[in-house]
Length: 195
Image (cartoon, rainbow, N blue to C red):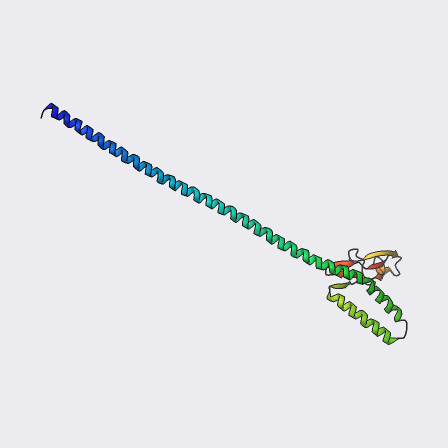
């Protein structure tokens, strides 16, 4: 082999290698471009998924808050409705309490006469009225002479000297009956206490 042939072979190999390297570089660049494009598409898909997940979480939070607010609204309106019914009854019952007092006074005066049919008739009407009011929740506050005075359940309108030592600090007389609606006292009994 001569030097020229060796040189041509080397140059040919180099040129051939350079062409192969160029082809390799081109294919690598093409693969990198495709890889970047695929990578960019994957990043965009992940970004879209994250965005959708965040949007879903926000909407879910809004829904839960709205649902809780609606439940609170339902509870509040139900409570207001019950209170309205109670106060409506309370107003009507308060307006009927003087009628009950009048029945008590009338019975006291009628019992002084000997007219039994009149006494029985008035007692029947009073009983019927009391039964009707009791069905609406009205109850009499139970206090009587000789009970210990409790300012939470009775109103002392006056004090008198105790007729007996046993009645000192206790109720001597009940002037006006008291009534309650459920657990709430709508009119305190008026009493006289001994000192």
